[in-house]
Length: 115
Length: 113
Image (cartoon, rainbow over all chains, first blue to last red; front, side, top):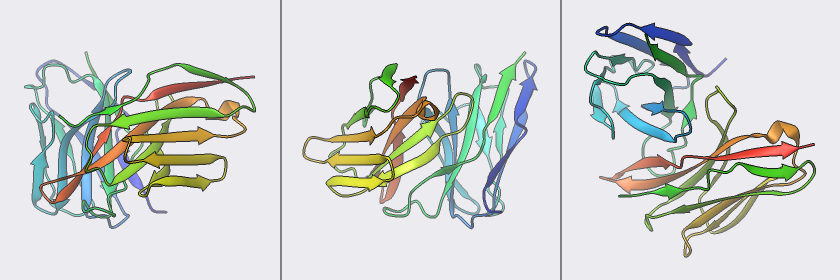
């Protein structure tokens, strides 16, 4: 059953803690993305990766880090440097990042709350 | 700065009527256009993609694209209560030889019985 999985579904973080959000896909997609969504807002791009061992900053990368050691996996770490991390985090993937193959499909999301 | 604009709504439509959702974008070089549906607390789900001027129909959904006016719309015929959701318009633009998708903030649609 192909798709994108994210875990955990809900995550609570204390001030000063780093937390890591998991994203796995078995669609054999090359490109993967992380977005943040705040209530009533659109999606803002945090990081993206087109190939293994390579990734680029999106529009709001400060306070976040990623890795892409495997094609299937693109974990996101929310560091203590991110001052307002409470949000809905969405992982997406697409076959390519080139024109015509860039349709993005989303995982179910992780809701992060800072206590 | 490249932008995608949508009316935030809420747009209230009676059951069985046609719902019309609109989106404008700023980058004339945009190549791919998408509509996603997002239920409250859930992730976006792709409804339609459109790449050429004109209409594209899929069941009760029709996407319309006018590149000259930088305008894309989504029509939902025979609206059902299950269509109540937020609809996100997304536009793909070329940036450093690779595409980048920009999302609008969404239009909240409510279908009233």
